[in-house]
Image (cartoon, rainbow, N blue to C red; front, side):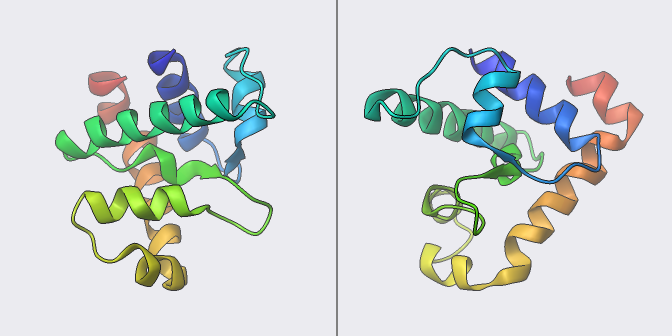
Length: 121
């Protein structure tokens, strides 16, 4: 399941589409999860964390920046992950509007580069 999510997010990063919602990701990656079931929503969050942690360890941008948890923007989970990765206090990061946008930009720039795509996809 992790590889399907990662592949979908990389494909998204190569486009100019906006961030993707949890539900749309589930449908497009054919995950079969139900967001109304708490442990299934939790599972998707854990998958996104694992993917981003692995990307971070390899000095690649956080793919979970491309997920929009709520209509208003990114949910707390992304910022808490960033705090775990040593980027600062999650509440301060959440208030910093350009922070998430910069991560989205880094993802797009990295994955649109054909060399990176061929080497790491």
